[in-house]
Length: 194
Image (cartoon, rainbow, N blue to C red; front, side, top):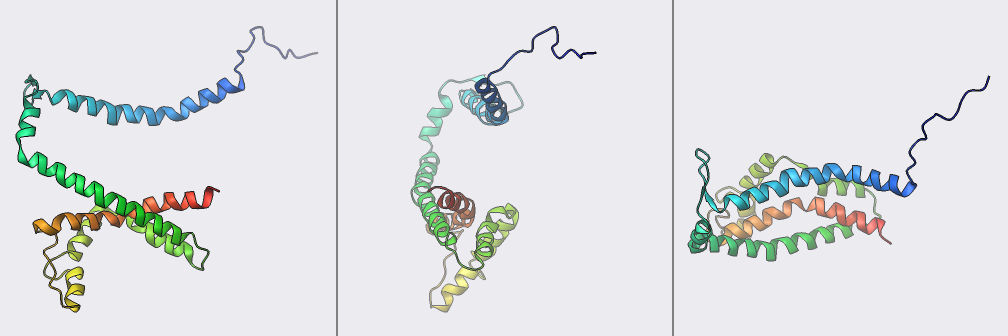
């Protein structure tokens, strides 16, 4: 008795290229869906709400460009743009250069290098609350470690987070705390790209 190997209906045939394309789209779907749901739609909703007066308790009321005209007239808006530009021009390049420098150091074949890599990545994965408490202690104007070290060399430390002159540099310094993630990307590139 011979078993029948072919069914009466032929199976649809997908070429290897079509199957790879389908697999690629299936793998991309969660990222694209997440981007659309959690980034693109909220951005479009925020843009649309920018043309309305909305207090979350009543329905939005169309006011046109009124919010944007009020924003442009507000001096705090221009101050925030200036602070953001300064942070972007100094903090981001400094963080990238330091991350690349540390990655180049971590790429050296020395004993115990995996321990050093772990030490540099660890700050990137610590809880935000713990990091905030740590920086609050380090930058405390009365008993902070930074001011203590400056006092040893005869310099009176500033009120890091409480003064207009030192708040932005303090934020840039705090931003350098998380260079471990960028360092890992650079390190992977240094080790994997010929």
